[in-house]
Length: 316
Image (cartoon, rainbow, N blue to C red):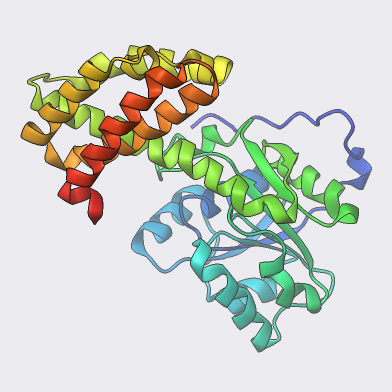
């Protein structure tokens, strides 16, 4: 594996003298995200002293990315660390922080950051009351557990939420891990995360759905067909937004959409509800953007509404 590249400090941030000193780092949740961030912090000169992880996959990942780092219970990880990285599932984060607070293991002067996109600083309140400096640093990147995850971290955007006075520390930590920080207000954190889930997680589902339909149509290598098309569509969407829309909805081709619905109902009924939902939202956006006139979009919406009402899967 090539040596990690050192991040370049962005203009306008605090000078190196204001950066956190060499820290003893503890990783709670040595999973797909935590182990990668731990390795990045180690490459930046910090000392990863302990990690926790319950699964065999976490143990394997820690051995590969954090060699020599002992796996310990969560409270022992906190006790050993100056900086605690909380890389656990969203729904377990609150209970973990509060539970650690009840043990009295948090101490004044520590730093902690969590990697949850859905949470801001409120979830860290029990630690903050103990004198811990709280940060929310979310890498806006997908991590699958594959070896290339470490490379994906470099240049990845990080959604940063912090107190104003802690922002230089938060941004410096992100830069040390190879990322690029951008600020997300506490009240906007959930909307920010919903946006990323819509774009990344649902995109995987859409691609897999398209690939399955192509296989059903007798196409043996769906990736070969989809890769250039979806790459171009993604580029259009990022550069042009709704103006990059193509296809039957953008043309108001009610007949084509009707044929799609009939074919899907016959050959892939499990795909009808998703097709209808996406086609409705696409039509609404095309109307709002002026890509469709009202008299062109109304028949599409009527057709899709009727299909949704008739589809048994749509009522689940």
